[in-house]
Structures are given as C-alpha cells and as structure tokens.
Image 1 (cartoon, rainbow, N blue to C red):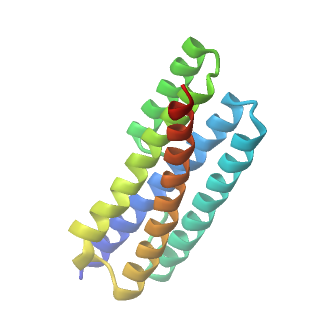
Image 2: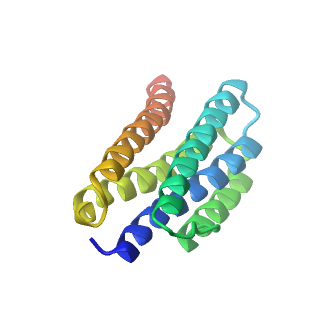
Image 3: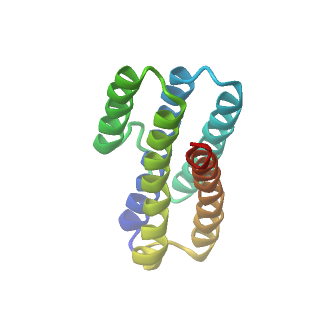
Length: 153
C-alpha cells in the first residue's frame, strides 16, 4: 500500500466532510424551522467528528490534511443560494438541496469502500465504514422528512 495513495483517499474524505460542514452551515442560514436547525446542527457535528477522526489518521501516517472544499462543493453551495433566493427559503427546497449533498457524500464514501479499499489499512476501513453508516443515517433522515412532506401534499 503506497502511503501517498492512502493520504489521497483520506484527504478526499476530509474534503467531502468540509463540503458537508459548509453546506449545513448554509442550510442553517437558509431555514427558520427549529426542527431543521436542530437536525442540520447534528449533521454538522457529525461531519466535524468525521473530519477530526480522518485528520488524526492522516497525522498518524505523516499526511497533511487538506483545508478547503471541493470545487463541486462550492458549486453545490452556490446552487443552494440560488435555489433559496428563488423559492423564498422553502422548506422542501432546502431539504432537496440537502439530500443532493447527502447523495454526494454517501456516494463518495461508498466509492472509497468499493474502489480504494486496497489503498487503506484495515483500521482505516473500519473507521471509514463507521463514518459511512453515520452519514447514510443522516441521508435517510433528510429523505424521510422530505418524503413525509411530499406525502402531505
């Protein structure tokens, strides 16, 4: 296992968590619904926890953690700004935007567990799988709330 490949995989996940952190900060700004603020705060904390764990792993193997977000994350947040402006901070629109972001995050973790498994240690696989399950749960919560709204229409 090449160390740089290992570092790259972990930094990819740090970036997706940076995207989530920024995305949920934006979502917190876009909604005035107390229940969503609580939910989004929890999701933000989950990503901060994941990021901290990943940075610990990177430091352990001599890597330098990335500090920014992905270009796609910046586009996602800009898209949320545009959509919020057009819809007047509509609850369903905010949830749809968040679900899109969750799809990207969960997909990134899934790809690492499928395609990059040989580039990471067994301990890192366990950590990443645990984080994947946490983020999948967050995704499912957003989807559940959004679907409940759609069923009331």
